[in-house]
Image (cartoon, rainbow over the protein chains, first blue to last red):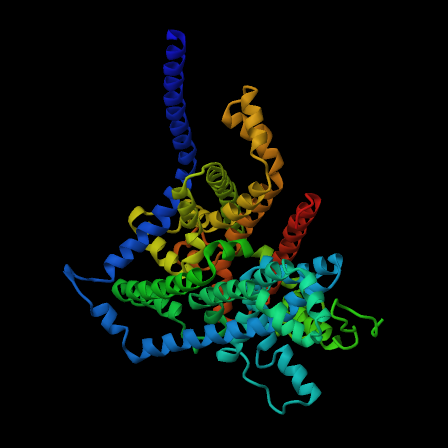
Length: 298
Length: 271
């Protein structure tokens, strides 16, 4: 009897010891994330908290003036441009991206891999190289205008860049792969049996597509929309180059206030608003489709 | 061929010809504009007309002959290389830790690692600029590398985490039960099996740094001007054909990196 009691108490001790060891172990493992968390905190989070603080400061006093100034028409028109462009680019990416992703699910494996290379090539190409390409193509005496003149579609060169049109073309080109990739990932997971079943039950191909395939591809579409829209909201490089100063995005107002005016109050208020808009969009879609799905689709 | 059924719902190839044509055009739109730069970079003319009136290597000579372009190239590649090493190490450790740990809190930590990807780059850029002004890190290579590392970490974490998801952690347990320490088990058992993901992640980190524009615009300069910042400034002023030469070289590099990453992933049987 005594031996058994001894055994049980020993087992209890061991269990306690094991638990302590497990806790020490999981702490050690947790510490592996520290370098990453630390560098992100120092380089990203601390400065943003600082900008947040600056956006409410004027000299030594608390103020809302930086935010009030954002109601100035020039900022409001920037906000409008930013949203118009983001909606337009996202919309065009849906229209252009959906057929590409769809076809990729319909062809043989090898062909799909080839199409995938076409979609991935722009992603791996430098952003500036692609902007440069569009600057060359869309110039007044550029390739596109020359070609249109030769064919006889137009009589005088069109203004294709340094305006809204050029910015839209350039941005769609940059964003399109980010729509195709999540769409393709979600479409590939749709079982072909559903389409067969629909046909079997008398649906025409068009009906089966709209009533079965499209609804099932919606999570991927939502992920694509969110990625593209969020990237568009804060986009700087392409609008700055292809817009030629005529398309004033919110991000460009931030850059101007820092580089030209060194006005950190205004710049940080603009930045905070941009961040809030971005997080709001992410949160909204995160609620609807869930973050896991968004990331899983990537 | 055109009348044979193309899908399970009996649509023929002929009836969906429009789809093939449309997708073909979209893919042309995606790829051809960048490729047009290649012949232009060998043009003898400053005007970037297509087809070029004559051929020459003058824009490549202009690039390699310019001390400024050369030094910017060296800075960019040094930064990209150091970023690759730092981001891959930090990101792989984090992804491993997130995979092994069961705790809920840890799943929340995952979001933190994605923040640099979700927060608009312009905001990170001015924040880093503000911070570096205090620390004296503006216009330094160290400053560029630290900022680029943060931008590359999300890609590394996502890529390595994906690799770890299909890896059976029990193998490491076996190694440890046979007496290997955890670090040793990781290095000799786990790492070799996820090396494809780690190498892909490293390539992504490299290209992320090499392509990064917005942050570099603020924090690079002086002796440590990056290629992207110099290109951006040149593009704002005029369409200089020297950039066509640089772009062609960068395109070549992108093609090599993309092919490498695709080849690796195919070799591992995963896509």
